[in-house]
Figure 1 (cartoon, rainbow, N blue to C red):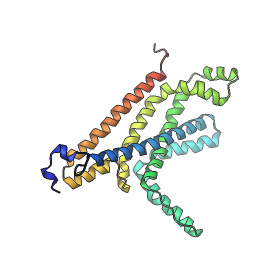
Figure 2: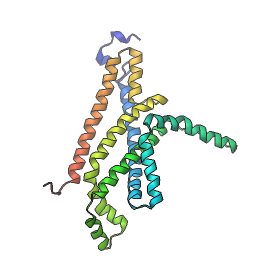
Figure 3: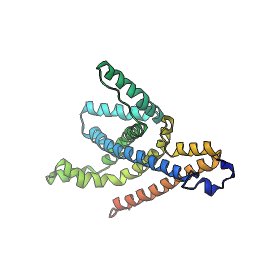
Figure 4: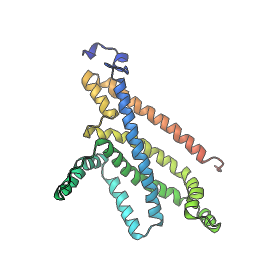
Length: 240
């Protein structure tokens, strides 16, 4: 296939021999990994924030080690550890017990790493947002006989969202870009798809710029969504 004689439109066409479909497939896989890791990270962050604010000394120390350790180690190292080192250690233990081997695919590795990283940062974002809530609101809810779960749903969560959403928005954008690191373990997300297209066609500038434009579109759409969520969360609040 002589790609050098093809126009830009032909190279980016959705159907072969164009590579546009491959780029969109890579984008879709990137969004799946980012979305799965982000949602799991939010759950980890919520639990971590609750543990840091209400847990005992041991719980707080363990969570401090988790948030500090995860934020200190590069995501690329975590991906390589989970993809190569963890299965190796597990298989050695299973072999000693006479059991079969296990493997962790790049899709699961990506979601797990993004969830761990997002959870560490989300813990601090949510902890700060919860601490910013006036203590009197929580005390008033308890004085009315609300349970802890009901207080969280009706008081804590709505009150913390305006302060947490900007940070959570940034974490989502970081998650979408962190998926590019999965290329090192052969996962064909957007960045690897663009590199494959560039390598096959020798049109490196075209396909890498196309990938950049797709990432930019994701960022712009995500910003609009989070801005709408912020307006909804702050509706009726005084800005004076």
